[in-house]
Image 1 (tube, rainbow, N blue to C red):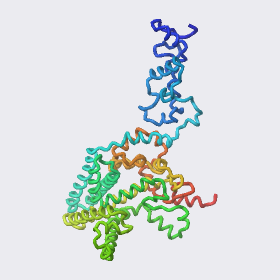
Image 2 (tube, rainbow, N blue to C red):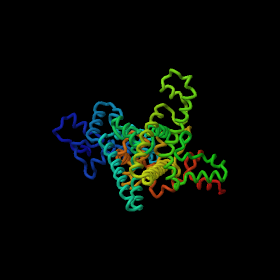
Image 3 (cartoon, rainbow, N blue to C red):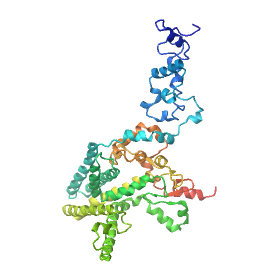
Image 4 (tube, rainbow, N blue to C red):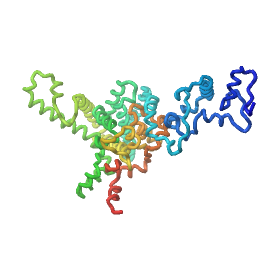
Length: 476
């Protein structure tokens, strides 16, 4: 029949005639010699994976098991037969077919644009908090800390070196406790809000940080990540223009204050000293305010009198309450621990371990946003998703250190949605790995170099090192 494949005689006449004008082989027709059914059905399945599809390139950005070309061919054949028989053209969403191939240069998908298209789907698939997994994570943190404290008491009479090793190990678990406290602040460790609040407070007492107050400040960072006009990070870095206006002594002091060697001292101030000093300073000011206005505020409820007080130490009455409760529980517990262990062992174990953990936390947090050529925009042109992908690093840590830090190295996922639990970050990254090709990878050996990026180049909207800034001043 004019070179066409033979149609089985058992088919009705109408279907045999329709099959003879088909521009592609039907499932029940034999394939001519030298050809394959897959080759003839390319026009139905769409272009090769490197080409652009009807969803503007999101085909290559979706997980492998959700791609459009994985649809059964029979459904596509049925759609094409319906068009030929009825003289209609189905909408692209009904046919699920790809557009005609475009030039290769235009077919390369933009990972950032693709990420924005599937961001909601990504979040919905991986926001799966689980109370049992959260309880297990907390138990595997608190129990080792208690055992290490007991071991430090025993080792103190045997060997100072052994006690130092135990203290170093305890600092890792205190760092883990801090990251879990941070996750409770996002409400993502547990499904239950009560568990998040309760364990967040307990972990805050253990680490010395008022959890609610800290989480409010941290939420501000998440809301403005990548906008360095609004948030300058824990290192409080300055623009290049401000650094250039400093004297040589001021520049040297600026660099020294951000040295990695000062991280333990900064950690001590961050988690132990500053929360106490802030609370005591604010409380002293509150007492002076209440005394000086005792006659004017007669008959006013006590809570309203405290709420009327304005101080930079806290921004709301709720923050003051959490600071007060944190210190009211932590300070007596520290006193009891010092009495049981002895003051010097308490200082050598808990205070030193907390300082090391705080310093490691500051380094960990800083390197996830301060690295070479990190995206750093101002208010104008700021984009939340770009800040998460180009202004946040993927810290490639050994498996044991990923466990200690509760997968916080997958920080780009965390900034896409802080509601994704830590135990879901790895699966999310692996499932959508093609979307994160633009994320900067930083290995453990590269951390010291990354921490030298302490200047904000507003012209290029990048974080740069002092060496790069000085190289830019030299004549070509």
